[in-house]
Length: 245
Image (cartoon, rainbow, N blue to C red; front, side, top):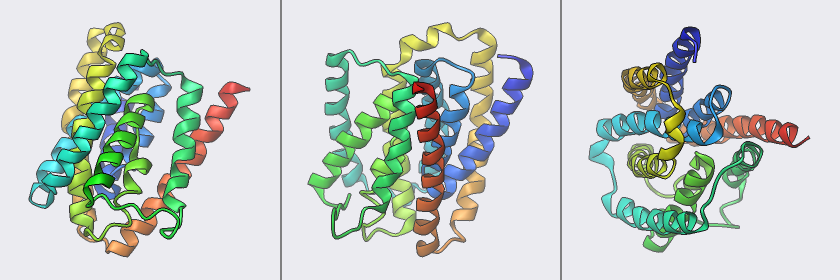
């Protein structure tokens, strides 16, 4: 990793963390795409997990008063089941499959509520959210749209949604780092230093995003979340197909 790439990474971490601070997930999608350009797929997923762990951790801290701990604990149980299954299957990711999967995930945000009325505040729905969201997060590196479809139709306000999702992502990213830890053995000392230096940029970006979030209405928040994540998904899908071709 050249010095200029390291500098670009720090800037990317700030702005993607800001994006996540506003919408709760879009930043992780963008950051992972940037990391795929400079690192092997497994290593990129682990590094993105480490950076997003800090970003989501700071976001969860800023909004800790709004975390729904009951929902979080049930989601964590679902994640544990998904991790065990993937470990037993000895799963390893491929870049084309990862990109295509991420590309189609935003479709979930456009499913009419009457077709699939999911609500993370219900225990059985929270478990499925942890199982699917956690499993997909481990498999392809991100799962924002999968998790969001359980939250975007709930009666929770935007602050509770952001806080609970951030706390859930802290757990998910910690699991992802552990799952792909062996892939980080290829990182050089300079690359580890760049990752460590990215932590304060993630916190600063999250703080900036938190400031913007407080000035958004619930309606604008949900509308823009769908549009932005869908645009990112289209990019991933096209890239995945191009890799197959």
